[in-house]
Length: 216
Image (tube, rainbow, N blue to C red):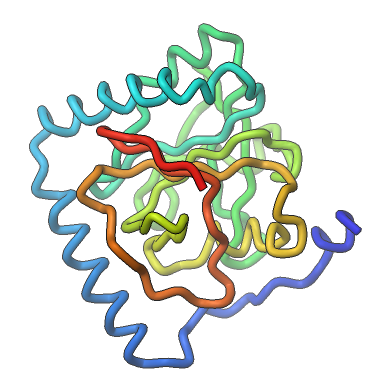
């Protein structure tokens, strides 16, 4: 059953809502939140990143996960950079998302250590070289900390609109309790009362912000 879920074909075109009103609502919300993120000063960003560490320790997530994927902050995202050396010191295996060169609009996860050379992808985000990196199947990750533009308290996530994470973890619609656990990282002001949701959106298991923890 699990193998079938992973082998199932995923949509390869852009994920587009059938309702223009929802598209317009998402576009406006993305623009507003991204503007707020970019308005943060470097000092505010660093403090938010330090505060995130406190929330992570409080959540105790780091105690029970060995294979952990995270991201390198971009576009004003809450940056987990201060967490990386701590995880390495605790002998955790870290991975970064890499745009898959063969599977359109999907991600693979490549090993990340102190010596991993990075290069910029087409969005200007640093990532390991797909051809020179060891990869771990997403179903073998235990925890994925992923970025987002907005979230609500029902566990819904709005990303940048490319659908990379939703496609990569689409199998969780059939196997909701399967690995990995998906935890969004965000500034507290990215919280919304309710988000417009599409059928392909993959819900999160929790949210960690610089000021609090949400579990679903």
